[in-house]
Amino acid sequence: MSSQILTGKEAQEAILKGMKKVADTVAVTFGPNGGNVSVQSSAQNDADITKDGRNVGAKVFPLPDEVTGVKIIKDAAQSANLAAHDGSTNTTILTMAFTEAEIKHKPNGLSGINFHRRVASLAEKVMEVIKENSVDVDDRTLKSVALVASNGDHVIADSVSAAFSHVGKDGVIMLERAVDLGIKVDVREGVMIEKGMALRGFATDRNRFRTDFSEPFILVTDNSIGSIHQIMPYLHFPAKEGKPLVVFCNGTGNDVAETLASAAMNGVKVCLVNVEGGEFAMETLADIADCTGATLISAASGKRFAVQEDLATARKHLGVCQRAFIEKGKTTLSGCPEAKVQMCLKKLTEMDESTDDETSKRQIDFRKRAVSGKYAVLKIGVSSINEQEFMDLVDDTRGTCKGALEEGVIPGSGNMLAWAAVKVAWPASTPEERVIMDACIQPFRQLVMNQNPQSAKPKKFMLIGRKASGLDRFISGAIDTMKDSKTPWMGYNVPSEKWCDLLDHGVVDASKVIRIGLENAVKAAGLAASIDRIVLNP
Image (cartoon, rainbow, N blue to C red):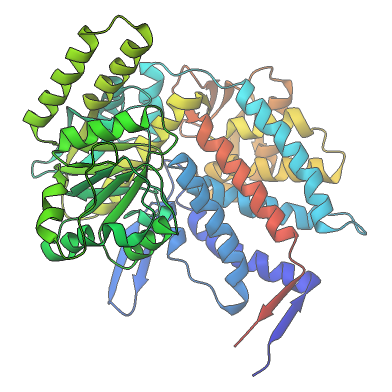
């Protein structure tokens, strides 16, 4: 059979059709009053009922002419979630809105990509407005962020915010299943370094770009691994004993990382952490070896990798810990042998006491804090019904709070994007300004619709002392109000259906989540605008 070619307007309609399939399904889950979606599997005679927009979007499958649109919008949501640990639903809604608005408002005679550049330029200004109006987080605001992110679950919000109060914005929070119902915050110490997995292919959870290994073996070398053959004897043990292997090194060559990542993607439990270029890299590797009981493979000490046939020596080289939690830019080793950790700390303390050099003392202090870093574990007990969804909700809340601590908070309920668009693009006299207005108001509009599904029909809304009937009139009135407002914090609280001081009422979003969602949506719309033909192969 021959290929079918979709061109021009036909191709754009196919892209929109695929995007709409995902966006319309995901959008109903948006916000505290969003609905559940049942994802049925005919093959398994089962249904997964969930409110998690990321999981819903991932399980929407396209028809042949919808593949491009579905891929673009899914990739945008996934990229946003990887970068901000939340916001996939918001990104999905924005991606659809920007793509649709650009197609709708593109002037005749102007290419889609050139028009998109104008839109992207205005979108940058919207991002600047978001940054300018972001405020730092205190304990009270962090609880508000957690409450919004957890769909109003006070147990999750209190637990996650309490965990961050112990470990700070740069701290690590792990999740752990427990027998007893509820959530318990457990603060522990572990070896923590500011380097993560070498490639995404090592991730056991690719949606969140991280690896979580239980009782792994630890291999440490301060050499560069020049060939995969050097560490082949050590790869024998994950297969033989069923335990993972974490490899710490100071550089790699000859596609070592790619080869190991390919093995990981094919079921081998292995992860590579390359500390090359990190602060005090050589010292960090020595401390990891000391704390885990591993032999430091080093040219300086004369310790070499085991030869292929010498599995006994290879096994003696390996250290251990109870858990390795490895993210994109951070690694935490918990449950290292206590005696080994104390010996390492004692050695560092003696080094500190034996020198008066301030630079050396700062280096030693850095190493001591890495060896005994604080992290928190949320021990979660929940019924088997929707257990994974509850764990995902806790994890999303953790990610959103981390983003808020990093970049601050902005008005929630879609107000910030809408207000920023009004300040940048009103009175929407040019096509690109109309795109910004149409797209950036859409999350606010969707939240209002989900708050009251009948709002698309004629209905009374209160708006600053005057009445507006119907959703469109309400949105128009809201825009009028935002035009007159000098601050985005006086906005519309969707759950309470009142205009108020949003910060005072705890209606906040993590600035990082919204900013990254906007960035990815605009990029995705640009990709869609660049496509002039779609080839459909049988």
